[in-house]
Length: 112
Image 1 (tube, rainbow, N blue to C red):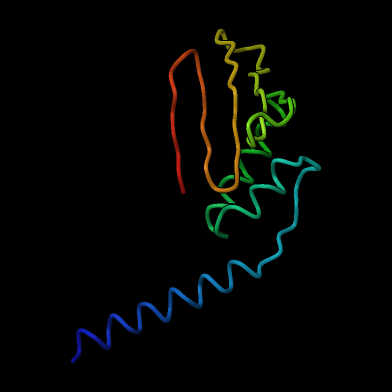
Image 2: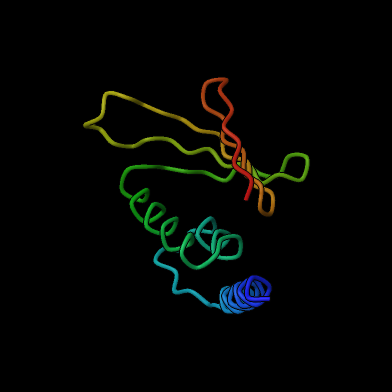
């Protein structure tokens, strides 16, 4: 009986967190569309982490929106740090809650 009660309390708490997160409105730090898109995809805690990275990327990265290919939004992200000897370029595909990063024929998949 105690186990069922505890599990039910956890479910109720999670449901409340989900509801709060879905209704949240965030202050955007940049005029970037990618930040607005991230605010609709991530939960509050994850969004704030992603938002920090997007804000830092303004100073060290350049990105451009390429268009839509097979239902995926396509972005190219390039490293703009002149002090770094590495010049990275990433192809970023975004579709709702699924992301695929491509880097020199190596594919990293992240599904939320």
